[in-house]
Length: 382
Figure (cartoon, rainbow, N blue to C red):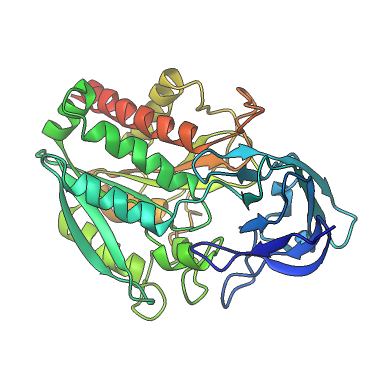
């Protein structure tokens, strides 16, 4: 019986092969460059020829979020278009924590990933397509340490400045799938919520804040191992030019509403975290935050407010994080309401999907729903 082969030297690829025997492989995940974070994987198996493969990812007790492995199922695709879920088991005691994936492809090839990948090629296609839509302009806010563009799409004629940005943490690919849904709705000339929003708002959309980490197959950091969502208090060209470029543009436009889009490894639900605990907190900001969450929960069965992160105590907010920093920075001048949207790597346990779990398609739909909720939120505000 011939051995399978495994490759990961491609856009967002990440795996290290320790041993292969026949259709079984022992693997480990490479850490982010100059960082201890690791959890994202993406690799190709070839030579399966319809045989079941057994893939053991080891040493995962030391991963960034070991609590994310129980109940998790690996994403798998044979055509790189449709992503399903493979049979997956977690054993904390085996080989430093082992995730075992079993799958029998119909053909010779199968791709496995922590979540459905969102390639830089697809990102470029998204930017090019949206830049051709009526009323949309594209600009480069700056350049990353690896020399990549930080793309921003802008549209709308209103005075309310809305910033949408995603993939500060590059392994959270559901965030850029969400962007496809949000942008698709915003640019739909027949959509009434989009028409209202384009009249009332100026949108600034950054679909991928961390293209270097995305291409390198990182979970959480940029080219030099920096977590961008801990840089918003004092970004520098040497450590975090991505944040520096976006924050400078925000200072130029002002920010009334901001949404930072992420994925959560452990919590099997979509939820929003806020900016409680900032020194400049106002009741008006808090009321706006609560009202948006209530609208989105009513509009989307895939969103809920029961599960989420603990609320920060007054005065204890971490101002290195974007949502806190923006609400603090632009609260006094713009009444800024900022949101951190989290989607699951696993599934929405309230509405489970045995075939796909949480998926690109559900991320796209939630993006569309979030935009409609924003329209309703602004309409109610008057």
